[in-house]
Length: 118
Image (cartoon, rainbow, N blue to C red; front, side, top):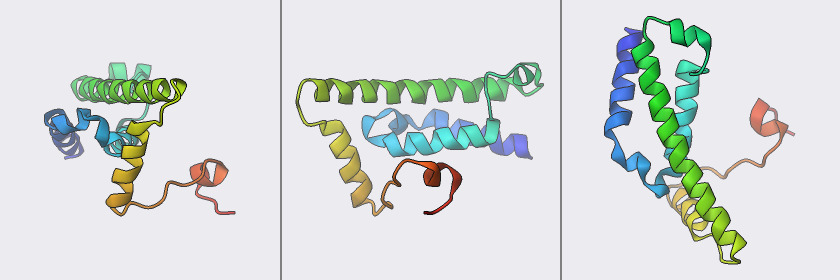
């Protein structure tokens, strides 16, 4: 049953081409977290020996593709900033997140990663 659920999850991700759009950064980050939760370290030796290697191969391919899109977006934003321009891609992402009513992004630090509040 779990394998079926994971296969359905991966199939939906593979079919959703909107995830490759720059404005889908938050969705990609959430999916990368979900993949980490479901599969852990996709590069581990234990997974390479797993009988569900096909599922893990698909998950790793999706993760690699999403991370590549994010890396391109980050590079574009860095390039804008180096040229002295406002990082329009970053500003659009922030505005899109705010217009969806998403919660404010937490400040970095231990409270963010451990769930502890100050």
